[in-house]
Image 1 (tube, rainbow, N blue to C red):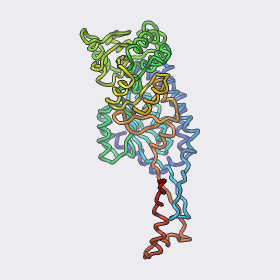
Image 2: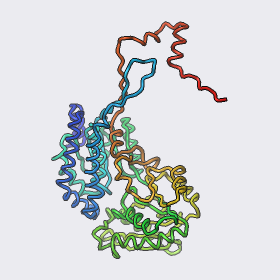
Image 3: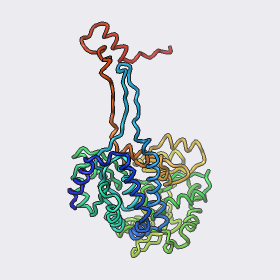
Image 4: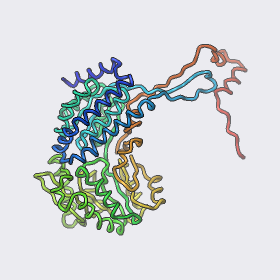
Length: 470
């Protein structure tokens, strides 16, 4: 089926009205949940083929993540969709006002390769729950996962979700079609292309992008525990996570203490030789490997001033990059752009104020992680920095809190989703006002206008002057 035909079929299905009943939405979510549970092993095999993911990690971060999201949405959907009453001004009384959520229509979801199952289906959950039909484009860079989705989705979600496989030509053709919302997850460069295409149709967009998510650490924390959490967040999926800690800021004393603990933390997670750990993944393709390995080699070259703490070995044949930690300065190649790989730079700063200035001088990050037991430090980061999310004491984990929105700000994205926030994203907030024709109280404000009506309108419509306390 061609791209144009696929989109037209999704439009026909939506226009038929089948998506609007609450029962239909629950049926689709239930069917997706059944697909994930009945074919979880198939999806896990695909993720292993594409990214070398361990089946347990695939369940934690992709398959199980999605089934949990589905359960949360099913449990709360009816309440989320209930009309929301709004107060009516005296001038319009008696009347009733409310906001209702109605589906937008046909949604396009364009997914990335790093979490190819989760990051395609998570927004689809919200779009279907909001009563839309969906056309989804999995990443061709994760071919096994794309094929698994294309194989199983039609069996469970025919008429609700259509999968379009292919590469740049198919994505380009999709962006030429008319959609009612476009949801894109990926990098900012392609995000600009998506937004430009959407502008031609005045289509609203959600952009889930990335960026360099910083960590700040001070000496008030338990360094061994902090090192385990930072290593876990950084090196899962071989560092190919949009919210992975990208670099760590701290004073020389704090970073020395952290550097002493990180090799032990890495060994706890992946053993003394991560190349033989079944829990440690691989870089997605040769170009990504060459980019990361090239930056690492450049910053470790003689004369750069960088100091290797642990790791550093690479193997192009297997696209293996050892979990690596190194001290660098702010001008290092690794600090130029999002690393998106298993290399963790440690950057020395002189003070908390310098750390905040360092972060604020750069693009707003998708996530910011602070490891400090000092309440004043936490307050300063809350009040003086801007990021998609702010976590204290743990990286990455905010994605698993269904009540929290997930999204970026500025260069790291626009819009948010997950749970209730997905319903908001994929719905139109329709204003509804009900006023009976009798009694016709509006006669009090109809023309012609005289002195009495002028005084009455002023009292009904114009706000009272605030009383001065002086």
